[in-house]
Length: 217
Image (cartoon, rainbow, N blue to C red; front, top):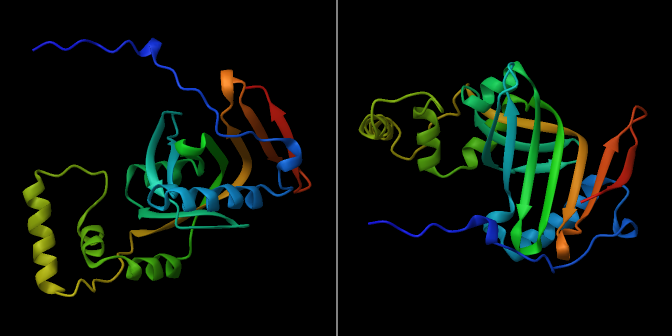
């Protein structure tokens, strides 16, 4: 049965939620992020921590996926994963990345670019033990991003591990842990009517100070 195609060029959205002015910005971008992040958490806590992580391999081929923010402070923005995953392989080759938060209900985006480093092993172990038992078992069994013959193979491996650790108290695998992106550039984007959006970048200069500049939409 054929279906009528949607004319994507005719789809429109008007951004009328709010504005962003230079005098409203905090001097430190982490403080500015904190304000927007708390507002996003209040609006929809189950989605506010979702962020796109963009990496690239040594050939410059990009790759993007959604991960969850688990911690942020003046030192950077952190998440956890399997070091053997595609993103882990990319970061081992090219330890630079960008994060993108998109909070559609508030018509806001935040881009954060910088260098990436591994968190200390004890940070990964501490967070791993906080995860639900099922998540710990899955992480211990899976070699993330690598091929597998079937889902049945994965499920059998988890059941075998569950028999060994009925309470799910498996130890954190050595190949699993955290990363931290140390920001060098932020962009705050606020959607505005008629596509005349507000955009500001914070750039870290050679003296370690943040400079702020408005961008054209």
